Image (cartoon, rainbow, N blue to C red; front, side, top):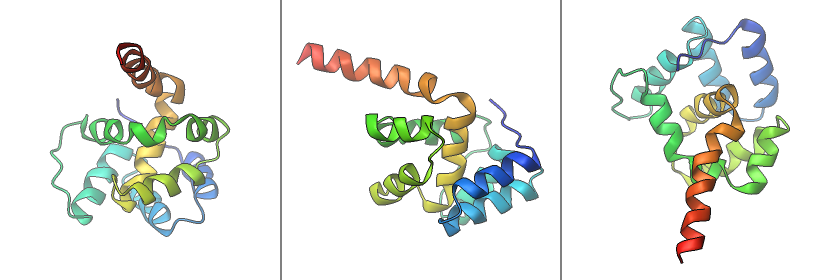
Length: 132
């Protein structure tokens, strides 16, 4: 899914993530890429020492690896209330996502829908609990 942010959306994410310098740097990169989150994320990934392919689904794959943190009940609730800072802090602390890529990951989740993004993960967790 291609996500293109408007200038107003970029400004909104800046206000939501103002306390994270890496997020602000990522938002600058997104702005430089005319709002294209995927293009910016690939450039940021290279800058962070990652080796992404140029597939449109690269950011989606990275974001899915962050699901255990993002879809925690307490953090999902924060996201649904547009409070991105606690989720950014948790991702940074968990060290499963380079700090430069936290903003693109959160934007992907936010723009594709938090509930839908977490639904399959929550279903898997409930199956695991049932089977154990």
